[in-house]
Image 1 (cartoon, rainbow, N blue to C red):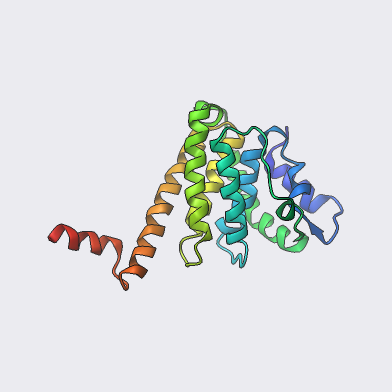
Image 2: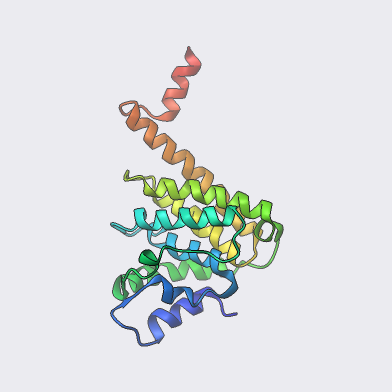
Length: 207
């Protein structure tokens, strides 16, 4: 099967398209690597350092739904028909894909099947699913700083999943942990009136 970057480039830039597309059309590119593919595609807009207004919440919901299905062992994902058929402006999708392709190619250059148990066994997929579900919740929080790093973690983890590269997925899980710590710190700072989580821990230890 062709590399994901090639498939996306062909679909979005080489073939004639209508002014809108949807997830159902994009899913036809995925084949047997559909879960990882969906994690990559749905996290991409929020993972990029470009504004993605209005996409973090609905895509976060979809990512959460998919992560739960990965946890319970589904082989084929299910998406709500309304979301799967929801029109996405081709021009906007091309903007995100164009920004993400260079990063995608860099990751593809170093991927190969390794530590495959993390991507192919149920325990490994459960760990990935739980982590992605938590990061998807973070993406749904309408607070700056709680979206980008968790989305990057999902992107890298999903890419490793679709390439059966457990080492890449493991790196993505590390990003997810860092993203989770950052999100908790930001929310804690808001809850404690601007005091960072680090400062609050120092206060607790001082007591």
